[in-house]
Amino acid sequence: MSSSAPKTRGALIAIEGLDRAGKSTQCQLLMDRLAERNVPARLQKFPDRTTPIGKMINAYLSTSTTLEDHTIHLLFSANRWELSAHILKLLNDGVTIVLDRYVYSGIVFSAAKGLSLDYCRAPDVGLPRADVVLFLDLDAEVARRRGGFGGERYEVEAVQRRVRDLFKEVGEKEEGRWRVVDAGRSVEEVREVVWGVVERVVKEVEGMEVGRF
Ligand code: T5A
Ligand code: NA
Image (cartoon, rainbow, N blue to C red; front, side, top):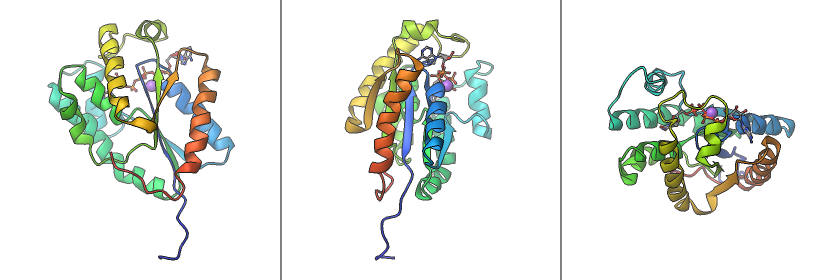
């Protein structure tokens, strides 16, 4: 065991940003590019609305149920924890994982309601740490004009403004892992910026252990 070469592992790539910043669009394009380059990869969206906890979150987001702020915060975190062992295993098996939102959304959307940043981070401490976070930055007014905005609980411009400021604050603690991408550009331009970062990170993590948040 001691003489074996470091095992190739997958990269944990988080795509974050405001509602309608183009996260899901870019996640799909990134998955396509990774497939073209023969990099084994999986897409994992958070919240994952398919699990029992995810179904509770979905009911909350679609505003059909009300939940106390701490309760829904812990459910979002629990939704990440229930998938964490699976994510770790895939990474260690050499599969790159593209996350459509992760702990950063978890922190800032709850903090925007008035819970402290320290409280909001705590339940996610220990989860697999993203090797890089691509923060798709978009003016709240531009986000509002994009398709489908307004249907769900947090899709209110004042909330989105506060969320944008909080993302900036959280990103400052991530140092080199946090990359701000101007999401106001065309889909293709954003795709190329994202790929430029991901292509490098996929190579850089080879032989490195998965970190913990
Ligand atoms: N949340 C989430 C928490 O409170 N705590 C948590 O722990 C987590 C994980 C649901 C909510 O949950 C909150 C945050 C959210 O409020 P969700 O399910 O990810 O989160 O939300 P969705 O509705 O699926 O996705 P978004 O609204 O965030 O949109 P995306 O994925 O950013 O944007 P996308 O790609 O769907 O694009 C939106 C529109 O813009 C166009 C697209 O074609 C589409 O019409 N578009 C562009 N137009 C012009 N130029 C570009 N570059 C464009 N890119 C995309
Ligand atoms: Na999305």
